[in-house]
Image (cartoon, rainbow, N blue to C red; front, side):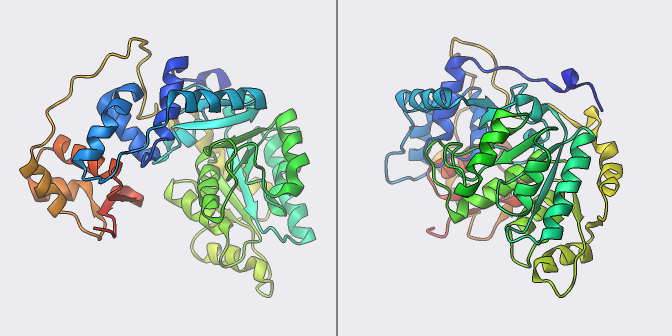
Length: 385
């Protein structure tokens, strides 16, 4: 295993920057990708917050954009402190190293527990909520063996396979990715498990606000956290249409290894895992299958610095900006878009305009709620257009 101290690289946010980051990510129409673009363009969250109203206006929004206030951010930070949690920025040393590499990584995550778990290379173990006895036992065996080899086990705190994997890795390090706020665990039956994770050598993480009750559409975001935090994902007993397959698909998109445990073709809980094997997932029947495949990936030289990294200045100085595109250039860019996703490079080539102008107009449309972002860097106008 690599030296943990070498893995912990990054720049800590100041209190002022952390408040600004929290305000920005909690403001309307600012998701992780938009946040990154705003920081990269304006240089700081404070400057980006000042620019949001004008960006929204130029993007064609018909209403005033809601910007999270300083008091809102301070209130959430206070809730986190009283809950025993903290917010970690993507450029900070305690942010999970693998997670910061994915497209659309959360700019801030709330974390509670032992932050040392985030320093370990991680393996995801996911599967059926309605797990069989043998499936749960196999998940526990895998989690125990992989944990003892120096990896953290990351899963989604669900019943069944997830819970078995977490329990078996409490002594070696486990990470629970949550769909709601850290104070809104789901399912309720795993509250004691979550407490054991946070009180021991484990960590709970979430990108959602405190008080946020998880809804069905929040679980794919939770699955994204699992796939992004892990170097590889092991799927045990997954039905044909399940969240575990979403995690596996995301893992593949992130360049992670996908492992699948074969099961009986007569068991519907194994239809999804058997399908993964047909699609090229690694056949997994023992822990060594995972450990041998992941050994080269746990080298430190695979990690690079994050893209969005705010300078450590306290004076709020602004980066010099190029003049925004004029109305004619903006119209050319908007007219080149439609409901069909296109690559940004194609927009630049098609319009013949500077890349900086294209990116700024896309940012304006995004803040105005008129742009949809798709996997692979594709964008389109919203269907309302």
